[in-house]
Every structure is written in C-alpha cells, then in structure tokens.
Length: 488
Image 1: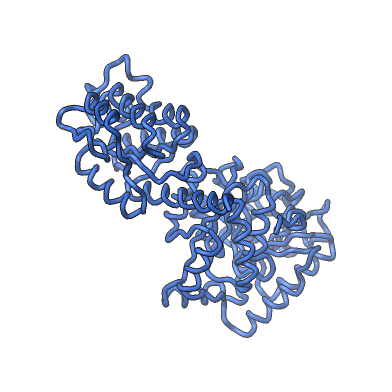
Image 2: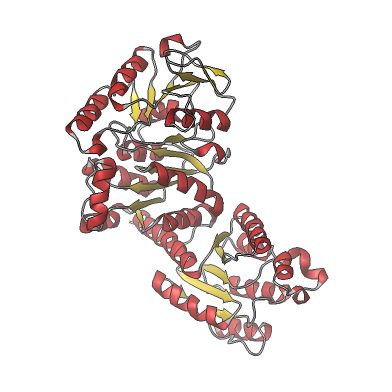
C-alpha cells in the first residue's frame, strides 16, 4: 500500500501552523497553559500566538483574548489546557471557527480509569473528523522545528529540522528523546506526544511518517495499541520504506499494569510483540538509550549489509571486551588475509598481536601516522564492512588534557582527529568511535566538541563498546533484511 496523501494535509496545521491559540493560560506561570504558551513563544517568536482566557487580560506582557471568536485573525492550531469537563465544548468552539487542528494537553480522561473520564474521552473523540484532527488528550503536544512549534517544556530544543520522525504516548519521554538527540548529533523533523489518542494515534502517525518525504527515519515509544491489525499494516509499510525503530514498553506484568494507568492502553503480550517485530521488519529497541543509539547509527552511518567488523583498541583489555561485545551483538570479527597480516605486523609495535582482530595498539595514544596506516590498511583490505575505534584518544587537546602531549609531534597535530572522517569518506564505510564519559570538566568539554565534529561528518559516537556494536548490528540487520526482500 502506498503513502496516504490525505494524512499530509490533515497533519499540516500541527507541524506548520499559520497561527496558534492557547486556551487555558493562567497568571500562574507554572500551570500547563502558561508553560506551553511560554515554550512556543520563546521557541518561535515569529509565529502569531494568541493566549485565550476570559478571566485575565494580560500575560507575559501580551494581550489575552476572552475567546476564540475575539482573535484578530484566523488560527489553524489550538492548544487546549483546560479542566477536562470544559474541553469538549472548547473543541466545538474551535471547530465552529474553522480550526482544523487541536492539541489537548489536559489530563483527566480515559487514563483515570473512571466512567466519567472515559465518557469525556469518548465525547472528545466523537468531535474529530477529516476537518478537525485532535492530538491527545493527556499529552505534551508537537515539536516541529521547521514549523515553529514545540512541546512542554521544549523552548530550548534545536531550531534545526532533521530527518527523524518520533511518536510517543509519553510526554516526558518525548522531552527526553528530543534532548538526547542533541547528544547523539541527530535532528528531529517532527516529534509527537499523543497521549491517550482519542483521535490521532500510532496508526495515523506511521502513515504520516511514510508519506512525509522529509522523514527518513521513524522512531516510536509505544505503550499499547487499540487497532492492532491497522498498526501492523502501517508499520509493515513504513519499515519496508524507512528504518523504523520502536521501543515497546509494558511487556512485563508490572509494566503492563503501569501502561493501563498511564494512558489506558492495553500493553499486549511479549510473544505477540516478538512476532510483530519479526513480521513487520521494525527494529526493536529495549530502552530509551537503545532507541537513541539505533537512530544515531541510521542517521550518521553509510548503509551496509556487511556484518564483518574490525575493532581497533588502545589496550588489550578493551580488545577482549570488544570481542565479547561483538559476539553479543551477533556480528562477526573480520579475519585478515596473509598480506594484511604482514602489513599490520610492520605497522604495529612488537608487543601487539597484529594477527588478531580486535587490533591492540598497546596504548591509547598511538602516533597519528601509525593510526592512519592501521585504518587505511584495514579499510582497504576488503575484509571488513565497518570499523569501531575504542580506547584511542582521538584529538590533540584530549591528549594534552590527559597528560600525554608528548605522544604527538607538532607536524601531525592538525589531522589526528580527522582520521575517522577520512576513512569514512574515502571508503564509504561505517566508522564508529567509542568515547567514554570522563567526569573532568575539561575532558567532557573536549569530548562534546569532538563528538559534534564526528556527528557532523558522518561518524557515530558511543559511550560504551557494547552500545556501539549493538547499534551497528541493528542497522546491518535491517539493511540485510531489506536487501533480501528486494532481491526476491
């Protein structure tokens, strides 16, 4: 089934609104209405934004309007932060004034488990249709950097639009994922916290991510689904076209109970979801970190189906750890032919085991020329599809910080940190660098700078060996499956 063109027009006001109204602002700046108003205002001051409340006349130096009918221009997105019993009538008013997109931030609906909460949610859902779509209730809203929209409390999110589409039933997890994206160097196209999903749900969003040409990678946090067959089909279509990474929460008995109390969803059994991932081709993430790691691999690394990896390590213990990490991830350590063995033996110091992979450079501060020769030899050997560099200090400033400035001659300084990028570009090969968190402010500052440089140049950075191997393995498995399906 091809992309749904209708979903693009229906979702447009959420992601690229012409003007926005926030219903339920308050003099209390800690209440959600004022928080979301302030977030959007700070994030995109160029977007016409109107606060609405009949009981106050001014907020943050701006005029507050008594009702939707009093606004000086038409708006196409309304954000509602009113008590639950008042929300249905507010949505009716929005519909009567031509507003086609509504976010309901308010809670107090189906997630309460009460008859009244469920009744209000059903009433709210009955108001939706092709001319009026609703995100929520019980959500944090939408983040769309290109459209100038953000969620609670995302005024500090990047203004740069990327190629990752993200959906989540949890507002707080949406917030954390958007923040983690900055650490991983990838940018989000749109992120949607959709809460109880009285109208727009995971099926709609999967269809949207498929239809949207700017979304190259889809990611999701799912607690439960209400239309299992439709979701299966939507994800199957999406995963066939684009990498689709899903963290399915609530698979344990305790997690399933928590899901029911959070958004009123049915979590489903672990066996059902195992079959779901196998049959749809979506990639299963097991945590928020796993989700972000995997998105980062797809975002930064060149495509490969080759599961052979070379690990280049700055110490023997880390070489052993890399072997274990590779095994656990289901990848293969590459084997070298005799010519490659001989060349590596001539490059590496005598104390190293040149014939083995992972390669042990003996110390974390190999000379740049030696590291260059190792990387070029391995990448050109034809024996590997990817390279992981672990426990090798990759910049001159980092070597100074760690007290090993003598390890670099001045004429070699400018290009030490460029080596992974050179290999990546010259051989179109995935290169991953492991840089652990330090604790020292100078070290952490340099690590952030170096990570940013690598991310901007197509090299993925991870904080542990296992996370690097796991993310790479998921990317390779996806492209191998896709290639096999295309070959049939």
